[in-house]
Length: 82
Image 1: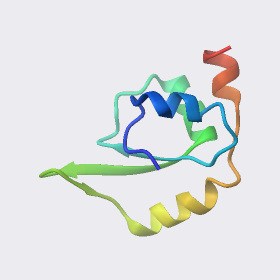
Image 2: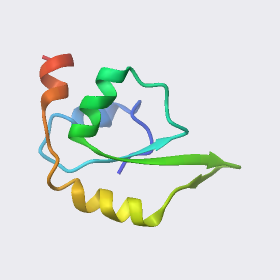
Image 3: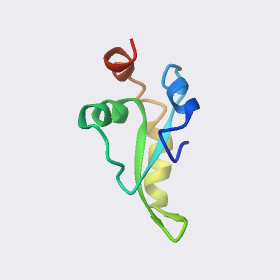
């Protein structure tokens, strides 16, 4: 589970078969095509940062964890990393 996509380990983890949940805080300013492919590789939960706390729906997080086991696509790597 990541609360940001700018960490070094996030990029490395995209190359594995490990499930990933990404907490997208305040709808980051994504490149549209990259975000489309990220959502195929990771389960994304939208959240908001308010006073240093993440505000998100617990049901969305649980669903994302469950779905992350099935949605492992490497399309983002084929398009942007190879």
